[in-house]
Length: 339
Image (cartoon, rainbow, N blue to C red; front, side, top):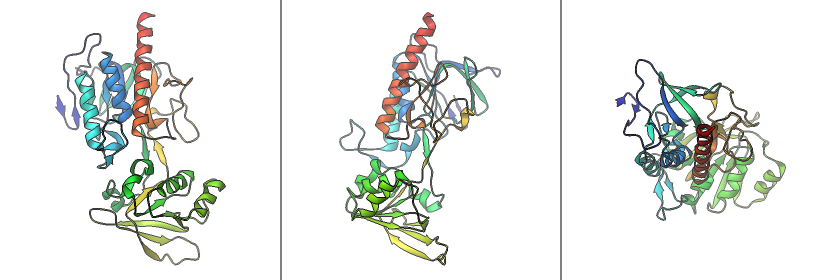
């Protein structure tokens, strides 16, 4: 069945579960397990749940695949000694989940209702219900909002030094931000880059004093205070930045800074708005987990990936989270069936 931005394969369900079927007459489409998100966490959860014959429905969005759909090479995901392009990795994970019976819905989720079971999910005007739910909606990097920045993502512009720093060995790079994360990124990049330019639009940093002291003392880090990036230069790859003076005594003058890479480290925003505050979050807005498992504060709702993890934010840790959430959901559904 194919609609605008919407594709579902309503193939035969595996033994032990009933695959989601198209709703008729406005009725909801029911699944034992619905997974929200189609990044490494969501798709790994789908693989495990489908192999357990739960026939999960994965609502992955109009742009499925998560942040790895940026056209950049992934060299630190196990099993690919030559590296693999992010979109290719996500395509393989999706195919693996579909092979075992996962149902893919390429639509955005508009809202959910977690007040009673079955849980209710609305997507593109359609309603889905689920006995159990895995939230793997991820977290989105906060970007500068420049057209050139968007155009050059994966071509020198990144939001993850751990993921992409190796590709800039022997080059000059820049990091934008003023918090601990930005300074951690800058310090990490000194392993590869000849010079790391730390650009901050204010005179003082939000980061801890010890992190600022380490950055100031590092011979490979050059700090540019009272500067903001207003343009990323380059056609097919990042070549330079245009910086503007933001100081009160400055005259809004601009300067060109030649770099081969730009790492934007001004924060991440967990994708939790669709929950409407139904689940508790920490001070940064990330979902809280219960008792060291993937369980949330609501019975039958499980959490995986960057929507709760603001420390590691790696594809492989997100995949591990997805495995854990699927195993927890499978166990919980089995307990409910035997109760």
